[in-house]
Image 1 (cartoon, rainbow, N blue to C red):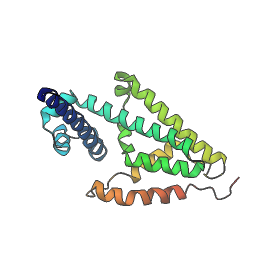
Image 2: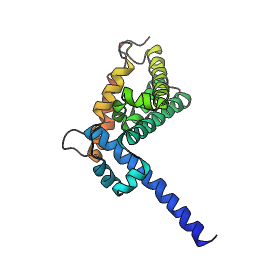
Image 3: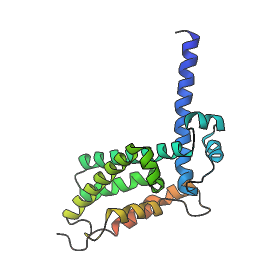
Image 4: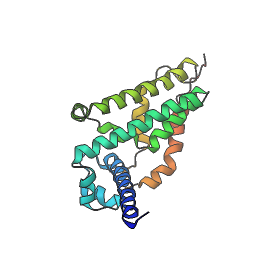
Length: 195
């Protein structure tokens, strides 16, 4: 293989790594600071320059749409996968909740009607996520493991709140105690009178 081909492959690898780093940093910052998180700060946190960020994402909406779609796809995949692999409905729901918390589900709250209008695939992924997650919850409720007065929307709000940093608390500290808080919340959903 010639030197030019190796250099080209190295640049592609760097580009893929940079893009992933930008998305990860943006995910955290949109949850921490909302939609107005400074793009310069996202680039800094990702370890790239502003030009690199704008080369991958021409503006805030493009970056936000990519972050939201990425989370929705990962979360929907997780719901579908755990539904097939885990026979215990409550354990399946718990695994799903912990997975979406690690993926910063709260960033999905940034999904605006304007973004959906511009990128209809976002609505498709969101619908897929909601459908898959609702099946997990319904199955756990039908077996009598989870209270029937709990809605998917309530679970999503709780996950978003319990898995985001409090003011002045880092993501790493939050990631340490968030799984336990989420499990305590999930344990509170267990039906007292099984069917």
